[in-house]
Image 1: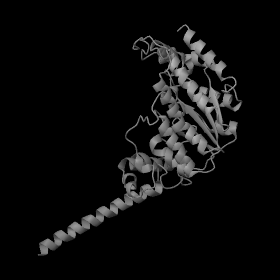
Image 2 (image 1 turned 180 degrees about the vertical axis):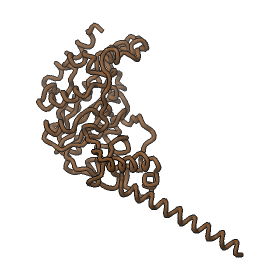
Image 3 (image 1 turned 30 degrees about the horizontal axis):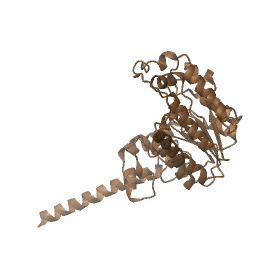
Image 4 (image 1 turned 45 degrees about the vertical axis):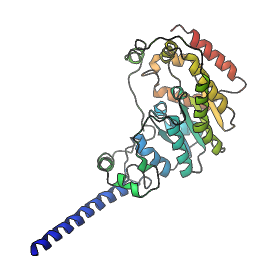
Length: 350
């Protein structure tokens, strides 16, 4: 009998100790909150901004801002300090590397739900994602527990050893060492080698299967592009008429267009861009930009690290051009723009 009572005491004690430890663990994460799920940054604490899909929603939910920079990895090198200075705003950066239009659209919708006073949105549209279904997603595993208001699934956050190790302990160490928090200029930004040899290191052209084509999009593909833009871009614009959307087609380099030519798809991408442009130019709260007429930019491989990604200097130039209204697409000149673009890419001596 005494033996059974001792076993019972040991069992209850163990449960109490376990619950106490887990409670302390959870409280530490709730207080430090490295992904800003519960609250804004604590003054005097240093934070490392990283892991976009874990931290972006917290930034949108709890930071103070009136403008947003968003898009795929093509927007990672924007500096909010430059955007703020040129466009007279207070912005945050919410990039999603490899993201589809739906993911970025849903992120913006949540941001508008959190913040009713968003004045400006800088939004990069990747041409490679235009000819996709509107529900296209490149990521299947997602920290969905950070994207809702359900308390129950927050256990995945507050009892997460990776959050403790990579988030909380790292931020505490930064604070103790006196390091500054990651700025939005630095957040997700990258620097690396550029130039012809770097761009061509993966033998893109050697691996392309040359096909006849350049016949343009099929009716089904045209419908796909239109649905993609209407569902994921136009819907956000229409719901927020008091917000100005600065939207641009991300400029790929000439080698990427050489690949498209070998695949017989140059006209496909120009038509897709044209469909998107005609839809977006209808809105008075949209300024739409395309930089392909700047052939010095796209033909100089020193501006690129691969077929798609340009340097931070180009991000800075894009901001300057947009602040001056340069390379803006307008309904009355758009046909001439499409004509020039088509003639250049179809006739370039690759």
